[in-house]
Amino acid sequence: TPPPGPGLVGSAQHPRPYPQVFGTFNEGDRASSSIYHSLQVKLEKRFSNGLQFLGTYAWGHMLDTAGTGSNNGPQIQDPYNARASRGDGTFDYRHIFTGSYNYDLPFGRGRRFLPDINRGLNQLLGGWEVTGITRFTSGGPVNVGLTFDNTNTGYGGDRPNGAPGAALTAPVSGDKTQGLLNPAAYTIPTQYTYGTLGRNTARAPGFQNWDFGLYKNFPLQGEKRSLQFRGEFFNGFNNVNLGGPNAGFCTPLPACNPSFGRTFSTQNSQRQIQLALKFLF
Image 1 (cartoon, one colour):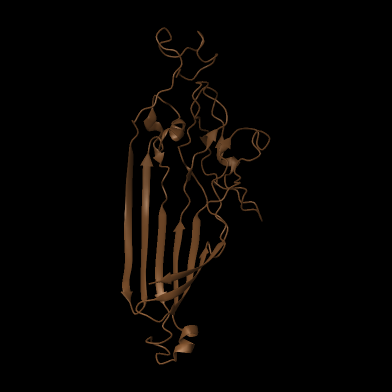
Image 2 (spheres, rainbow, N blue to C red):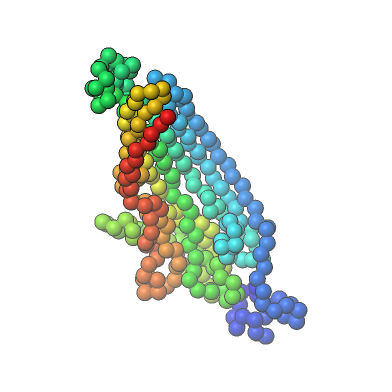
């Protein structure tokens, strides 16, 4: 990669290093570094009285220089100074909470409530079970980059300058898919210079999901035989979790990139309901 400067990349006016020896080629190195700090907490109740649950929380901070895998390699702005691209890693989710639970409702024969109910009513009121998994995650990192080769290196990965004190988002009333990035927070660097903005400095929206299960167990004649009806609700509250925004910066906006700061994707699917019948023996 030639240093930033004018002229046609690879020409005599703007040559690549060692033009007498090498032509144009791509290089891939396992030369990145990363570090991860975290605080992890777990709360667990083992199964008793029909109830069990597990809750885990992690606060974490991941830093790296080049992302993960070759697809994120161009996030390095200056290939001769990878450390200048050290920043929040691709998997830098500051807050992650996951909770799971299973509860046999205390109704029916042998349970706390209605323990002496007759077998007929027990088939209706007893044997109910609820279960679920809940997850909350703060937003992941977003790398704001230029849509053009401002340094004229033929490499890509250029970033803009950051505008000190400017808000990173610009919410649009009534439309959560817009304004996830604020154009006023960024400026174009002087031509043939690298931008001062750090890597992965913006954030995507957070994530929440609730999966539920409602089961009905019907005991059958014979040893340890039962029929189980299962109603399962994935994304039960039908939460819309927006994906990361378009982060290609240029000027003048919106003419050069009408999608800047907007998202057209989601991190999960819509509510799904599944019904099943299971024979246990």
